[in-house]
Length: 134
Image (cartoon, rainbow, N blue to C red; front, side):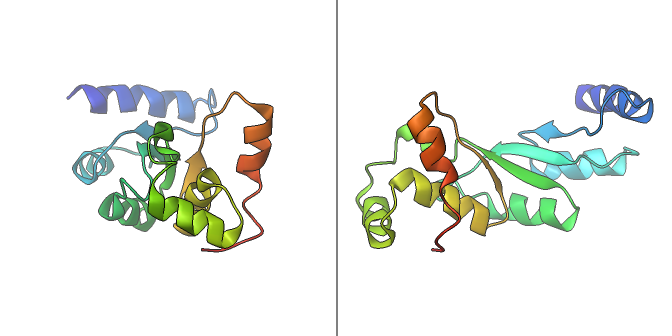
């Protein structure tokens, strides 16, 4: 299968020292199991879309059991849920923004959040999530 062939090339680059780490994106548990049965190098990371609104718990737990870091892209739901009444209520409770609550949720679930912003103000705001717990 194509993903396995591609992975074997990545393993060669890794073994030759051409990269420090290799990972995958959007792999499900089934994909990961197939890869792990046929590979020499375990992926360092699996980048998948994750947020409280798309909590792929089984996938996250499987990755953790295999030593694979889960990187959550679109943890801010592409902005679609930032006005959600429940999220806003939680944010107000902690004196934070909805985006900060979503990022903190990722961190508390051992996920590496990958929020996207072009605004310096929002980037700094997104980084200010270590002074509270949900």
